[in-house]
Image (cartoon, rainbow, N blue to C red):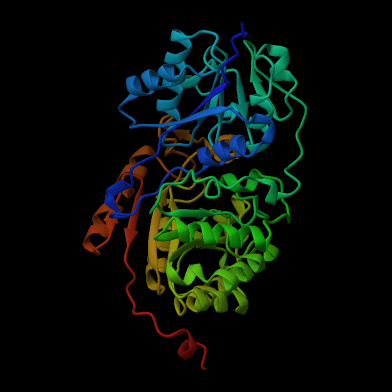
Length: 453
């Protein structure tokens, strides 16, 4: 008589994909990517052959559905990926799971999975509903977690790079070095995990050389590591097979890692796919070079976000943001002659004022670009932990939007929001819940004419 074999370990990966605000993207679909990176990492590890993985993604108002689907899968481990839009809902799902299955191991990762976030009053104490946080890149960490023989406290402590909740605070396990070779990271596209016809996501490097207080990117260790041209070319070919209508570059900026940019350009010269689709990226204006402009011309269709934030050098200095006004405007005009650009500015930024903000807005609207205003967020790894005490930041712990701070009373924030909505709609733009978009006022000249060629 043969002995029964143990069933393969089961891992449920849980996320919440937001719906685009104000129907801005029309028919385009933006599937969640980070959770599929984790899924691919599990599938790509030969030591985890046979592991069963379920990805669970429902609506924000369907918490009971989340719980029922997770429990029906009978997982041995649940991993949540959270960001601003999903954190409150996902935390509530975890709390309900813990009530149904008190010993079910639960780990959180993603941009909002930070101990400072879970210390906020609505989400504390975290030890009652989660076992571990991954406060950084999670692809290798999830592989180590999935290989644990059990999920006792000592097992969690053996995994490098985890933050573990206790009744009195947090315990960090041994530090994990950054992933040495980014090409080792498994691709969700290569594993067939991304939906056909959805917007594609591309990484060419990780981290950011800047360290702006309002931005999460700046907390990451600076690195010159980049995905190779071969890896990126493979991704572009996979995007073609997936019939991606657009490619969104996830990097902090198209031009913030010169090696990564050149690998991207080589990869596209091999593939040519970016000329067949839309290309969206962020670009840092003051270090735009001719090779960046030439690349944009090569791919044809692009939409570049340009982080302006404020025109006031004093405000930018408060947030450790480099500023170079003369080069900024010249770069904006050079980019605008090549493609569509969007200047991005922030309202309710600590240290600014409503009067200073509207001067920035008027200046931005005078340039040949679309303009988008964002309500300042108190993000983990940014203002949540890197604000200054004298700024007296008060914020909504669900949306993470600033309510008041230095230079902004609650009444001033609300008046500005209403005025932005009014101006955006009059200008023929759009108003979301926490952003306002203004269309470009000028026609774009040809790049070559603008360059005198």
